[in-house]
Image (cartoon, rainbow over all chains, first blue to last red):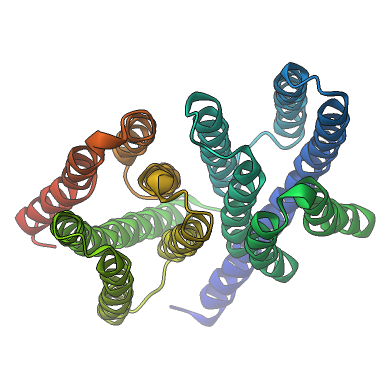
Length: 194
Length: 196
């Protein structure tokens, strides 16, 4: 291989690496939009749950969460479509993130289903198990993006799960606190920086 | 860029793609060995659980699963290290699969702890199947699409076990065989046939 050819190859490799880095950065930015959307919706959901619990209208809790999930799914689809129109590609990282959150959502639905179907299940355990699932997703996401801030987030959710079991009466407040601290604030920080 | 240059570049791209495919295949086979290990260990653990249950040695059930997790983690780490030495690379897919299963293992341990302290241990098997389903679903996208079926089976199993706790041992034995041991043996035989 001649020197000029080698230089050209190195240049090509550098360009590819830069493009991949940019792709991952873009995926992280896209993720931040979803994070803000779902973070806000879940916060609203927690607020409504606390309100309905205080008013004693338990059926509305399920209706509230179903409505928020539908709104979240609709706007997630819109964000995805907008991003796809802008870039014209769906990267591997994007796809993995989607799969991770789809599987975590199935897990969350099953936990809620157990709680409703099995009379022996303790409703107070729901937030703790949902927190464990969110921890898994953030752990995978952190490794995908090599995002140090998120590496701290996953253990926080797992420790939070134990605290939620220890203090079930305050579980929803802990959940909201974790959501703001590890989900919404990092998303806002990335948004402001970008 | 002249024709010769373009052909050379295309050849290089093809080589890169072939290498990436090979890398993914090796990662898949590595994951399969670890899967086989955990499948066998889980079957042994299930057998011992039934045995200890019959003898009413309930404390030994927790000890049994604790030992199985330790043994599995130790040998899983050894296999992963051996494969990394053999291939000389830690691929992105391999790293991702590793992270997924570390996350799932931590979550299972945490769920065991939570259900134990709250005395809701009869939901443990459902929760374990549910978490393993999450792991398979994500892994399916990175290594082997057939794992989607394994994920769905695990989730169905989780619901069945949650609703009919008396079927727990049968459902779990079936899930371990169908989603862990049989696919691992299948992939191993196929990869040996191809001389990998």
